[in-house]
Image 1 (cartoon, rainbow, N blue to C red):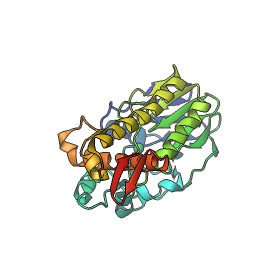
Image 2 (cartoon, rainbow, N blue to C red):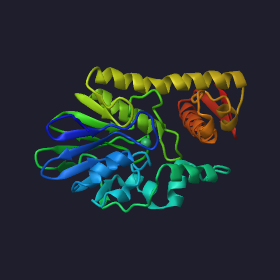
Image 3 (cartoon, helix red, strand yellow):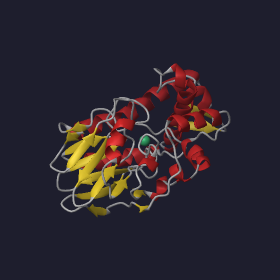
Image 4 (cartoon, rainbow, N blue to C red):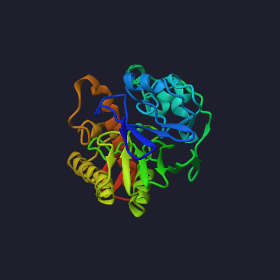
Length: 293
Ligand SMILES: [Zn+2]
């Protein structure tokens, strides 16, 4: 555990190891855990101490991993309840209900330590959770998932930004319930009012330098992907989303063991871009076929 401030501790995840994320522990008059996807060893250590509440940034299994380890009440934005309600609602929220992807979906849930969970209550934009000396403000930052939130340590100026994670894997908006325009709007909101520091859900953790520029660079990856997809579509002439996805424009380097998973993610991400490009008039659609205008 790494001490970030007098009362805030970072439980660092092993880098890019699924299904773990960086979690925060706030030891104050009330003890609060932010996200609960730590390793078994970290979880064991934590389960020996009293927790008053758990705040969850969103419903993905690498943030809500084996939540039954912690009996404390857990809070989540209601737009992400789908992810924890039932196996069926999880599969639909991800996009695993598409033809041919149910088996990999169930494997993914097992690997991720998915469990149904009943939230104790909702989190909402602007809500402030007072732990004694520490105040945490909920920022609803949708796009990655519909209910994705960041947690701002109000007096410290540090944002726990979760899967606005500033890694080279992201930005990720490859679920059936992701929303690319909302993701860009969430990033623009943070760029307009950048926090003093960020703690990411994956990757480097505490980022104290060039926060605004890092957020801009992260957002611009989306626009670079869009240009690459446009170029691929121009080469194809006209293509269905599946034909475009076969070009693997976003996920070129992918792990063989999860190839089918990455096929689905590429398709869902490409579809998000195609819809956005159609709205902005840069591509046109004729039935299933898209072409550059
Ligand atoms: Zn996530």
